[in-house]
Amino acid sequence: MSILVMKFGGTSVADLDKIKNAATKVKREVDRGHKVIVIVSAMSGKTNELVGWVNQTSPLYDAREYDAVVSSGENVTAGLMALTLQEMEVPARSWQGWQVPLKTNSAHAAARIEEIPRENLDAKFDEGMQVAVIAGFQGLSPEGRITTLGRGGSDTTAVAFAAAFDAMRCDIYTDVDGVYTTDPRIEDKACKLEKIAYEEMLELASLGAKVLQTRSVELAMRFKVPLRVLSSFEENNENSGTLVCDEEEIMESNVVSGVAYSRDEAKMTLISVADRPGIAAAIFGPLSEAGVNVDMIVQNISEDGRTDMTFSCPTDQVMRAERAIKEAKELGEINFQELVADTDVAKVSVVGIGMRSHAGVAAQMFQALRDEGINIRVITTSEIKISVLIERKYMELAVQALHDAFELDKAA
Ligand code: ASP
Ligand code: MG
Image (cartoon, rainbow, N blue to C red; front, side, top):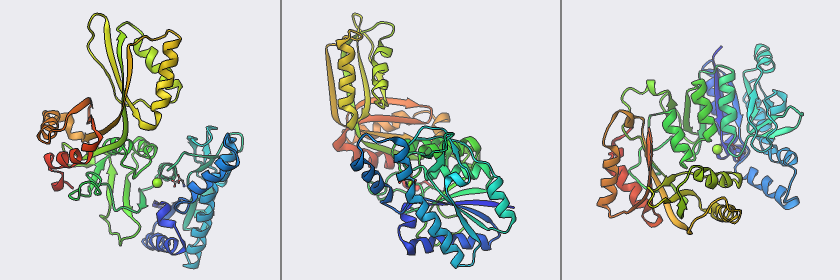
């Protein structure tokens, strides 16, 4: 029995016509001989509305009740999808997370999946059910409460089912037709990639290419689930969309596969901190306790026992970061001359697994930025990524220049 997982995001189930359109795609796969596990999101906008209602009712809400409310959007679409399939004479039924049961830990609003037992679904498949429609994003805690997996979590539900049921593939239907070399709204020469490696997708996803929830890509990589991102609003064929897969399946990897950006970065510098053992821990400990997502970190070389420490974080966390650092200073844990926040920067990164075996990518990137007269404020690198912080007003220009420099218009 070959199982296919098909996930439909919010825009793909936004109204009854769209649900019918999605159901037609499911029926086509059933007619091809697959058993299908369908994962649905809530109708687009629904989850935001539910979150709003919770906040209005109780600003310091009980997270268990938040999950009870916010998970409900998916219940509606799961039932409607099952009904639509039944109307098409496809034997289908819906399952809420707790019915499967999709077992999670107790971290409400950000729960992690622990187990998906197969028995209940398998028994129904054996009885002739062709399609199991699963409400995405939700699960059951050890205490028997409803949990949710964090915003965008239906992607993770889909990949987890694909792994648990040894699915041949997990197809993620969305409102874009694949993963692009960069954001087509910024660079109209952006091309759709036919294939991309898990690791590259992870870098692009966490850099703000919002096609897939990052955790879903981590999970797909761990269990080697082939993921395909494709459009609900097109006629699809065998090769539609972008396949996210193991790098071994990509014959000739690109040196650079994509250019990602993140507009809302801030750069913070502690000027003249003592250069002594424990100083980084003394700075970043309080930041982490304050829930600041620190991204890049650069420590300057020191002079006379003093150094500058620079880091980046999302713009909307600057105040929190400032408070944490000032408190640490008042407690005497750190000592610096000045804290400078620069909220006028953006991050641009090039990503590609080919970088591992190619020299000169950084030089090429910096030359392309120089040719546009763009000043680089901070640089960080990893094995498959080079990121720079630049002045925000040059972000689009930088993305375009790098897309050109690495000839990504000829990618795919
Ligand atoms: N409906 C949830 C959200 O909007 C989960 C999802 O769609 O993936 O975050
Ligand atoms: Mg999504």
